[in-house]
Image (cartoon, protein in one colour):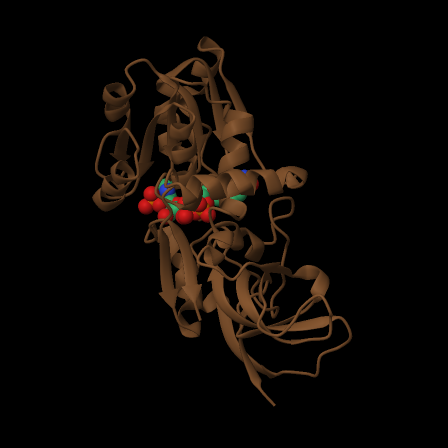
Length: 331
Ligand SMILES: NC(=O)c1ccc[n+]([C@@H]2O[C@H](COP(=O)([O-])OP(=O)(O)OC[C@H]3O[C@@H](n4cnc5c(N)ncnc54)[C@H](OP(=O)(O)O)[C@@H]3O)[C@@H](O)[C@H]2O)c1
């Protein structure tokens, strides 16, 4: 009988930073597979800011979870055993595998992936983050050739893809991120300008980098950066609210952006984005994202941590700004 090590939900970090003690290590003995079930050896886990929301049981954003459950996470693994004839031993699959060494799921909740060098990209630029960037920018931001597009959280999984899609669409691209190393990397992957929001004055840098204003702002962080961008929006700007990570650990919600009335003066539009609802178009979007990656128009970076014991601390990295590119962990 094989043991399965797992990380279970222990705490509710609502209104505060994540703590390692929000998770508890446990072990179970694997049961025999039931009809239709597939056993997967978990190989790579994906980390996303919404996982904190999952612990906080916020309805409407991510599915709620309860104390004592295995922490949910998307991941990729290899089929070890199968009682669903759509899956064979050795297949690489993707699904909600969770923070554990072995996942046992009904076959309908898993999808077989091609076992090639693009495998882990399905947890990043060919997965939810790439699709969020694609639909959020193209459908809500509606960039036009010659526009200036600004992205916050630009060195992260979503933000780095947003900036590169904007460039492919003929825009000038500016990104903000925390730290000089991230700002340098943005230049390397083709951003026209980058702002280290931790050490530079965002408002002043925007005046230099976007003298004619910002036509599209793709916001992943909210807070002071959003407020500073509102000063420099161009006429008929489109502001895509994708995320607001600057408030995910706060006890009390910050006041709304003081500069919001510029939305009126500039006849701008602020619109929230959720990936939900675009499922019918995923296949086509993934094909386009894949072709941009293959021909070098989108450069992808993974930040890969290692080891079962480091799973909880890897989720914290997102909120500490420690990751560059897509945060993954290999078991
Ligand atoms: N609406 C949707 O459907 C949807 C779907 C997916 C993701 N999202 C949102 O998209 C955003 C990015 O997600 P991701 O998976 O790509 O994560 P990510 O950007 O790879 O990682 C999170 C990044 O957020 C930044 N950050 C952390 N705390 C911050 C703070 N207090 N102020 C400013 N920046 C902070 C850090 O970068 P720095 O070092 O630059 O601070 C960190 O690296 C999140 O807000 C997420 O909730 C929305």
